[in-house]
Structures are given as C-alpha cells and as structure tokens.
Length: 115
Length: 117
Image (cartoon, rainbow over all chains, first blue to last red):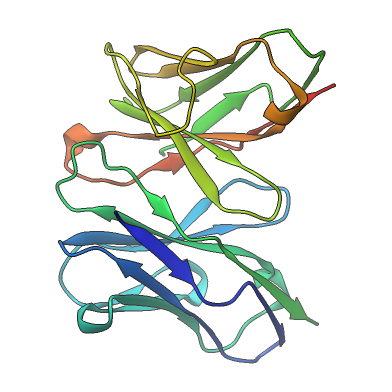
C-alpha cells in the first residue's frame, strides 16, 4: 500500500530563514507528487506538482521541490520564508495511471514563521 | 479557473439527524470527485471516490450506508451523513478532478465543519 511520511510535525522559523520540509513515499511504481498548503482558515491550495520531466519543480510563492527517485523523496524548499508562509503543508502522492487518481496525503507539517 | 465550492461551510445538528453536504465544481466538469475527512491536527483521510453516474467507491472502514454519496452530474456531488452522531463531528472536504483531461490533479473545496450535538 502507498504511504507518505512527513518528517516534521511542527517547524518554527524566523523570517528570512531557509526552509526544507521532508517528504518520503512508499510505492514501487511511477507516481505523481504534490505539495499542498493550507493557510489558517482556508482550504487546500496546490503549491506545486511533479508529473514527469525535470525533477526540480518550481511552484508558486517561491517554493520548489526536488524529486529524488532513488530516495523516494520529494522535499519542499524555500530559500527565504516570510511570515505569510505560516500554514500547514501537506505532501501527497498518487500512482501514475491509477484508475481513480486517489491522493494519499502525509500527516502535514505545520510551519510557524516568526516576524 | 478550477474552483470547487462546498455548502454549507458549517453545520450544527442534533444527534440522529441527517446532514447533506454539497460539492460543486464551478468552472470545469468533474468526472471524479473525492470526499475526505480531516480530524483536528491530522491529515486528510480519503473516505470515498465517486465517478459521475456510477456508485461511489468507499475506502476500507467507511460505512457506505452511513455516508451516502451521490454524483449525479458533472458539477455536483453530495455527501449525506445519515443518523449523525457526535463521533461524526469533523471537517469534511471534497475535491474534484477532470480525469478525462489526463491529469490526476485534484482541486479542493473549502471544507464543511460538521458538529453533531
């Protein structure tokens, strides 16, 4: 069965610090990978996605993620965080060619950025 | 584009009553809709997947007779929590995708907070 693990439950950073959130998945086949963000009181929004091609994916708001197939990882990065990045971040995976496109979510990482 | 709405955003009901939650794709045809449940400080758990015009596929452990899902059109899916109990209190989120387009990308609604007294 597919699973997604996010290593950090809560990350606290000061503004301008660099961010890296870990995400590992377990699935033997080809996958699509996603990072979603949920700002306080808002719904899930897609930050970035990887389907194929360049494993370094750039998303909105200065975020990027790198797919490392050999490590089954898709870590999210941002060089310099802002207070407005305070949110919960979810990594998600679905199996390429899956009949339903089901997304399997990690448990989420709460990011708190101190002004 | 790709906006998904949910109604109501918040509902409080008495134990034993039924509650219907609507999920609409506003600007695209959603061939597949998903229903998730999110407990406080936890991740989203997929409850069921529905394809337009066919029966929903429920995840293991989800009672299909308690959580009735209807996906009658390409823009609307409904989740009915029947005979709700306090343990059904949760945040219910739907998402929609147009798998016919070849993408497995889901667009999420804002969620519905259900409180059962």
